[in-house]
Length: 339
Ligand code: AVJ
Image 1: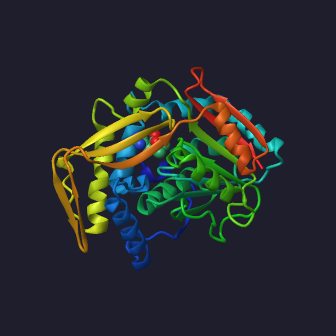
Image 2: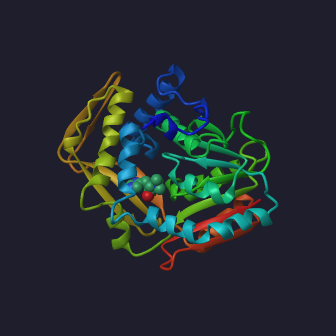
Image 3: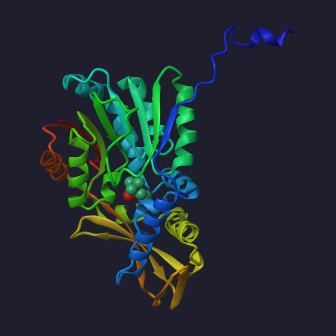
């Protein structure tokens, strides 16, 4: 039998997405910024490290594993909302007069969520953005092979510090996609400033926003989601120390630290910490820090909102038209906000 007959008559040329890298872990300036940000946080009386440092290559994989855990309800709950509501989401864009959308996926990661939405929203251009550059580059290639005709511009950048996008990104009909409750990593004040930069015509120039947000619920459910039985979230938290060791040249020993996840009800946030198991010190070129046994490094805040508190925040940021969809238990919400 002639195997050649089984091949497609016309093989499409291998398509590659455009990719713009504005974030280089190994560039001198970026390294200086990271070193000063990290050492400032580590040297503070109450030590802290920004959660963006979770996401090196292994951290991104560990986060993917978290999303499959029984206890971690946000990802699958949000996916259920998208599955149930994608048609009314597409209608919401149309009602806002957005026809040739540019879908800007903030913290795109493996691009899985947008890939499910693209067939329904039919964007003109897809712009996955992430700080984990190598991981994103592979994911963007994957999306391009799924949607060969789609205009894709991958952007490696730290969007937490600015929302000005490269000139290759379409100016008109920009729709930001910020799922997964990642906005919860900012304090409400920071979240407001972030959304204002998104709306600002000179920066994000958003016409609309699709936003996934985790909602306030009972403490036991929240804490289990951030302290799972398999210890995957603990590994994700401790992997931060390995990433810092690479960036700073420090000598953190992950075995000396314990993972903590606590719901701070008055601040409406889950806090993750790493707690020193004994008195110890950590060294890096040009510095060191001693920790007493029991002392903590604050590694993440994950703010939980109500439907009312998030609607109010979106209005204050400059969005005027606000809709949302939730799951039957009201555990998670997807907001559509138009400028
Ligand atoms: C990606 C920030 C939304 O806060 O739930 C998961 C990160 N941290 N488990 C979250 C995370 C621990 C996640 N976000």
